[in-house]
Length: 414
Image (cartoon, rainbow, N blue to C red; front, side):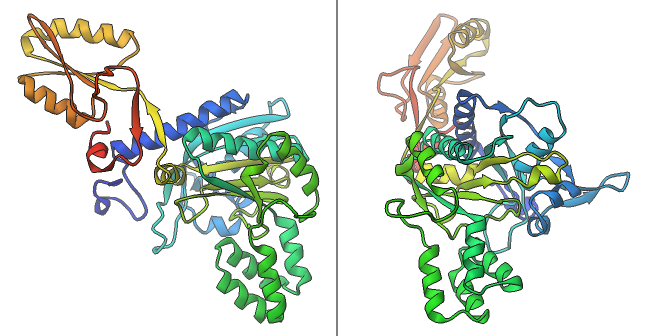
């Protein structure tokens, strides 16, 4: 259960209980370590932005899905719907050595449809490169995304790569223009091929040509694909240099839900989830709209979707074990010294003092998923196995959080 009582919260909002909070934080931490190892520097954009920044960034379609309010001076403000635009605004403000490579983790806020079942607030982790044009930077961003997914524990996924301009040109050559083009692109963004076919037919495209369009817009293996969009050969060569060509496919049906993309775009498909876990691409026009023209490319992963992907694939994430120290009231001083010693050794230790029997202390350790329980009295301490998932003689050292542990294992997450 992710939210303890959704009736106490506004629409689309969730409280994350310990198990889900731990999973999210572990994924964010794993991704952050990869970003730092690649030399990217962290930024923490403010949560509340001027609404005009959203207009310059994600555009009207996203602006309609934002939380808006006014400050005491009458300025229209917005809870950030994405992290790319605030990061770009920080770099556009000046004082950066270019090229700039930044990363971030943080919550974004988007009003979703009542039937979507998606939260209106969720965490993203991503990276941006400012001041570098060309295929190499695009390939680096895709490669970085792949490494982040692997570090988070995902083992089965595919990166679909397309090109916004090439997809628009493809539709326009088929006779889909103006309002019909906007409607067709919106259908593709939603992966609604029934709606796409209807819009195409209404635009005067023949049934045979609509079928051909569908074939062109389906994901396809890289092998045998010849120049699906300008710069593809250079992009593929760069992806091969990073050694990730086996993780990618061509998908000219990708239309991201941010209007700022101008070139190469990509999305992450994972086994076990029915929607993209993230994506990104090139957005060379955004920085100019923010007053500092520079080429830019980047990506963001939706942390809840990555967690869901990892869970569905049965992967594991290493977490430090919990040692529970329980002491009778009269033994608090001795227990305090023991707890301090254990923590200085780098162990994760919870300390409880009170009228616990040995069996009550052991049961508490089992409920918390502790790897061991130390019961302290005036005469010393006794270490007791918990019989839980971290028992078996290992003691403090290597605990593994099993994503598919089931109800018993899930109850012990702390």
